[in-house]
Length: 276
Image (tube, rainbow, N blue to C red; front, side, top):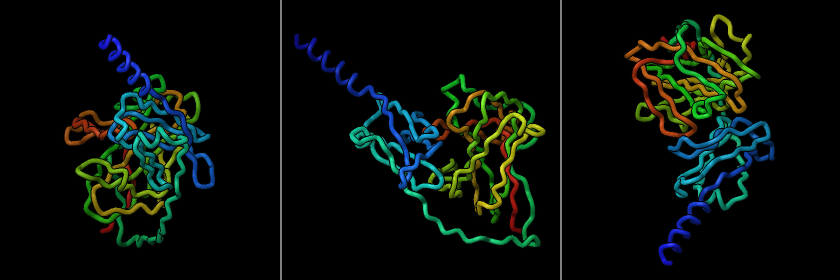
């Protein structure tokens, strides 16, 4: 009888902790925040908010002391432990990031135009497929080695195959590194860099977004990241160099730990102005 009671209580404890939480992310004016990433620190669990700011996250068997994180470039980061979040009303209010940016004028005589990264690759390397839910929220990154002061002016992505059922959002970020990996807390952008594309927007296997007005400056190694936005429906493949053994591919799901694959690099590159 004692054994049956113990097993019953154990079963109840598991069931009670099996929970999928629905919630909403808004700003201080109660406006929904779209494409906000919510996830568990160092776990491949999370979701992206829809156009109404709604999300759904499965916290089953996740340690309640772990942190839930929300990151959106133009807002201050949000963090709380799972236990506190479960006991809340599941509405997350993000505060806008206030950043004073001073425009830096480029003297063309002192800066040179360069392109860093992998470009013009026509071989499929990695990508997204809405039928593969385990990978549709994957984020990819490349590392740019740099020691000079530069400004990022354009981000380019080579797409070798694209079949979309609706327009797709590509979301980019530029981050400095910590211990050789991308670091969200060192993002160099103050707003979400989003490019919405259809198949006809891909010209010569390439799409680009001009970020010259974003004042993205750095004088150290940095990462360029890319992911698809909420509601991605279709399939697209990013080109890459599978024989670049001196290059690395960095990837993660949601806010899981960054992993490194050392035998190639996706075809992501940036146009920059480098100080001479």
